[in-house]
Length: 426
Image (cartoon, rainbow, N blue to C red; front, top):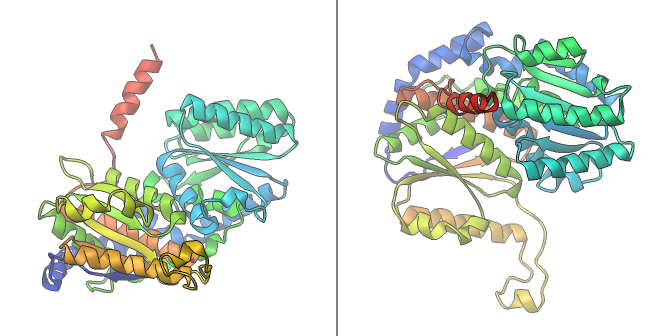
């Protein structure tokens, strides 16, 4: 993975100053890695090399695959499903469930909107009526997330109606060891996967939260973990090779100048959920104590025809990160016909056109003095995605340190949860 520092405002000397300020935080991360310490909120950094833990996830994956599962229903919200969904879509594309080479279809219950929930119930019921085996993976770190618990009740009831003899066998609960959901799983003899106590939800993608569903769907979780582990080797250096520190320093340097919007501009439709995962990571980790950076996500080339005018011609109040793959070049050739002849595109490779648009966008940003950087993954492999996600979590932790906020709590999120529970109790 490469990071190109194409910023209009910040010199390398200033960047190095901020990277150097991160030394105490880097030392904390390095100590956590060296000691394989799981006793602090930094525990997530060790998940890629927690091999005994990986083995327990893989064992349950093989047990459930042996049942002949046709459909995986992932029930969770936020950090409990965002990472797994992002990686699944990044590999299988936005039409993943239309790829009949996949043995197991994925559906997600991540909200309690009545219309959407009813549609999903109807869909899952159709699978059950057809004799398909549906496995439910209920994921909640706290074990008390309202939306997740409600969806679990709805879909387990449906499962039990059609498969009364083996419904319990078709449920996997992923949660904290001491949560109400863990107690429920033990009492009802559901399979249980534990999220290490000090690993927060939005940092949990490399725990059972992500590993179990991805493994069930046939994705090589070892390749993802290897990429994430490789990133740990660079993340504590005071160097421009430390991608996480460079990105954090760039974002903070612009934040200090009043630029409080960060747009992740993605040039791959399959990575849209990866953008949503990053958006939560940044917003929940940094938005507190009166501070925060507003994360937005744009998709190229679609959003070049919806918001590019604002980005280039409006206020210079955002920092943009262009995320792309160096080798995402299609060999498809544009046919020569009445349509392509009009724009002299016939015979060109589609990838060449894509490259020209990306070049044009970055040049326009540079000439209009819109601050940006480019992250280019070497390819679209699971390894590179593991590198990117681990470096992004490190980036946010380092950025929080520079901003002086705690990246691991979300006190204001609990406000709406308390109010909702109080309403339901009436």
